Image 1 (spheres, rainbow, N blue to C red):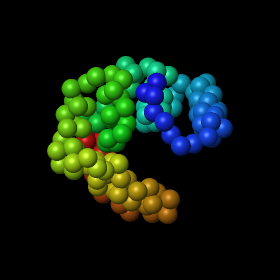
Image 2: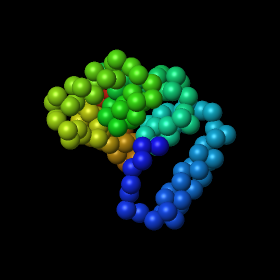
Image 3: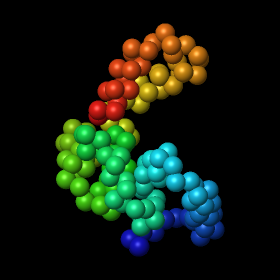
Length: 140
């Protein structure tokens, strides 16, 4: 719809659209919270296939969606929101035109650490640290 030209073959574009359609069909019957969160997180390529009002429940206190600039920008384009615009303006003023994929930056690192502890089966020794990380992530 934006009249952009890409140096790719139509067969490649068709294959990507087919893969997107398969993924949408896969999750179509699932009405769980997890599915809604997943669909909200991958908003960039879904455009009018989403119920944008439903996605608003995933907005963080800092105005972002999942602390992700690209997801926040895609949501903002399709469903204007002052807090989302403030989050993005803050990032652009802080980082310029090359913003990080996740902000605040430490959240991904900390959640990866929690995941690793869980996978190793030793998370019970770090309950207070994990609780602190999860509480901070939730508040962000």
